[in-house]
Image (tube, rainbow, N blue to C red; front, side):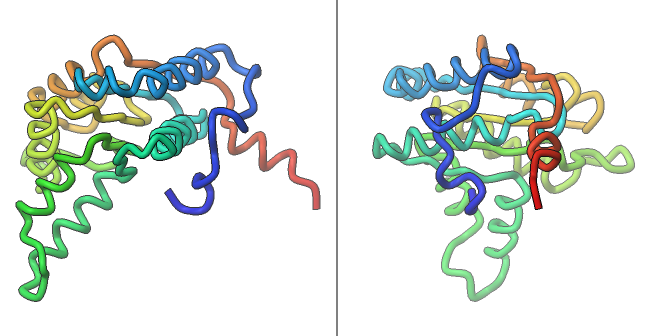
Length: 198
């Protein structure tokens, strides 16, 4: 997560400024409180909305909360996963592509930050990331592993705007069934930048 988010928690968060953020905040905190149930059921969460409204912040709070409970969490993005998988193409790599995908697939909680910044279809052809994402999502779906998503796009827009395959979107929908939340409002980043004093 890097230094920006390594210490964010539900307890040290500022709330009360945006009702949608507040609703998502409370549901994310509740999710972590009942983590054993969601782990058993493979229940995920999908947060979406404009840039800066607090999606990554909330998923970082969740990751830090789960880590404090000694739960295995991987906080990453498809971009980072793609880089890691491509590194296995090197003959000197100590891991195979499949071993790395298995590792991402089997971790107890996977946080997918900023899903949809990638383009999944180019010139009416699927990109390499299209099949990589489906492979990963399909593995986690079949294994009932909880996955937490943040995105600037709704699940439907991932298909219609970003070119995600229907079958991947369908699995994401089912994995986060009942916990798809849109957050609107002003950018929290911009507000903090405006309040800086030099």
